[in-house]
Length: 132
Image (tube, rainbow, N blue to C red; front, side, top):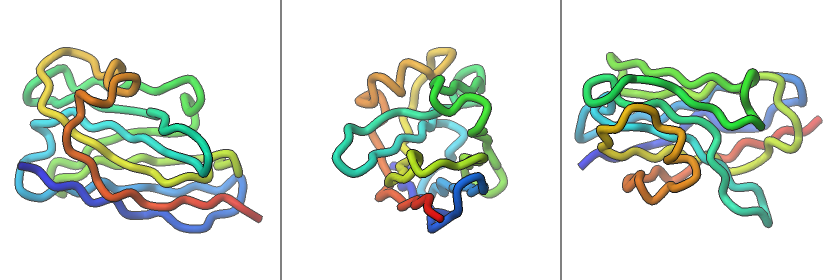
């Protein structure tokens, strides 16, 4: 069973960038669909972006409208990791960010951001604070 650890969170000024990492152990992360989620204080968890497996699916990425054009998801199979590059950060992006993974065979992954129960392995989260 894969285990996930998020890193890269911290305090960043508005307009700046941050890259989050989701590093896996115990299994090959490329065999999994991976999604990024966040939960801000007092708000429900929301899905942001996902990338499907290249070994079991089509390797495609999906972004919700709120982050499209600002966030970029990518894989590094050598490092067994998935990254979330976040640009033009806004105080509204302040949240705990989580990655999650599931062994899915369907092409595309966008549905997992609205039905996260398909992703059965979750990391512990990393806090991102956007503030001047």
